[in-house]
Length: 310
Image (cartoon, rainbow, N blue to C red; front, side):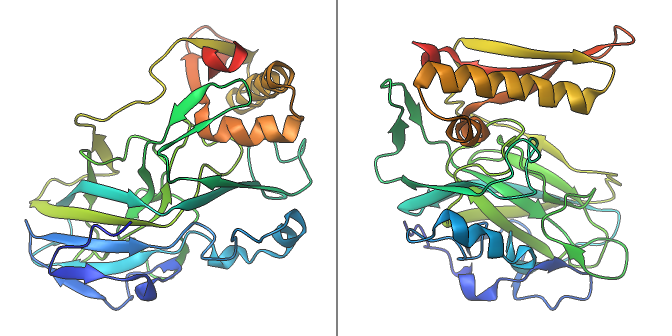
C-alpha cells in the first residue's frame, strides 16, 4: 500500500477526532511542498475482518472518522484559501461496508446491524451476476480548523470542509478551503475505495489509505465554503443506468423514496436480501436531484448502473 516517498510525513499515530482551532500542529509545511499522510479507516480500527454484525451495536461514534493532522501551512492567514491537490491515493488490501443502527438515509427501514468485508487487492469487485465495478479511491474528509472556538465532530461537514464525502475528491482533483485561522490547521481522513454519490447507506467501501498531497495558497480569496476542481478524474460508473424516482414536495423524503425503490429493484435483480442491496447502493448508486423548479413537487433519482439488472 505504501507510496510514502516525501520528506514531510504524518503517520496514523497522529490521528485526532475533533476539529478545534486550538489543536497543536503535528506537521509544518511550506506552500508548494509535497507531503504524505497515513489515514486510518473510518471506524478507527473498530471494524476488522473478524468483526461481526453484533459488534456494531457497541461502536464508539466519537472514534469514527479519525483525522490525520493537523498540518500548519506556513503563511496561511484568515481570508486566504488553501488549495489542496491530491497527488496519489494508495488503498489498503481490505475494506468494509456496514449498516450501522441509527445511521444512513434509510436507517428506520434498516434498524439491524450488518457488516460486509471487501478484498481490495484486485482493484475491482464482481456481483453475483458477474457485473464488475472498478475501485475508484477518494477521500471523504478534508478540512481546516473552524473559525469558532470549541471542538467539533469529525463526522459532521461544515463550511470549513470536513466529512463532505464528495466522491470526486480523488487523485488529480483540487479542493479549495477557506482559511479561518493562522496556519489553516489542515487534516484529512475517511478514505473510500468506492463510493456512490450520496453514500446513502451511511458507508462506502471504507479502508485505510496512504495519500500524497500538495498545498498552495490563494491569498485574500475570502471563500465562504469549499469548492472542488476535478481534473482527469476517472468515473468508474460512467455507464447506462436504471433510475428510480422519488417525487414529492419534500426533497429529503423524495430521496428516501427513490432509494427505497432502488433497494427493492436491486434486491430482486440480484436475488439478495434488502440489507445487502442497501449496502451495495452506498458504493455504486448515484443519488441526484433531477428537478427542483416545478412547484410543488421535486424529483430525485437513485441511479443504479444497468449492469446490475442484466
